[in-house]
Image 1 (cartoon, rainbow, N blue to C red):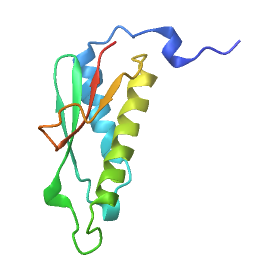
Image 2 (cartoon, rainbow, N blue to C red; image 1 turned 90 degrees about the vertical axis):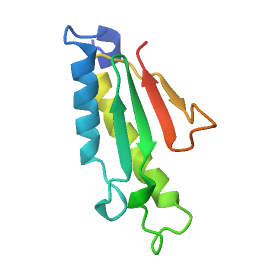
Image 3 (cartoon, rainbow, N blue to C red; image 1 turned 135 degrees about the horizontal axis):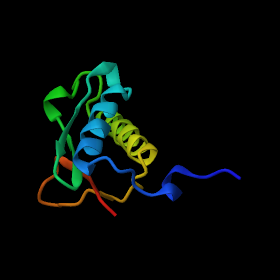
Length: 109
């Protein structure tokens, strides 16, 4: 019988350490011309993904679509890392309409 990672429940490591490692794992995500146009903010029980508009390549990506897709790849990498540690994903996309740089927040379940 196969057991899923999320079914095992959280491991015994501190959540803050796991969140930091998830943000670090996201650095391996592919991005448009390897610009890594994201920033992570690690809180005690949550992880925020922000777009770093300074890294947008206006000549290559005038609408910023590839920038957002790149951030989505980083979010996916972070979520896989969290799931592998037994922390299921609960993500709120675009959580603050007054903060357009904040793309997603992952909170603890």
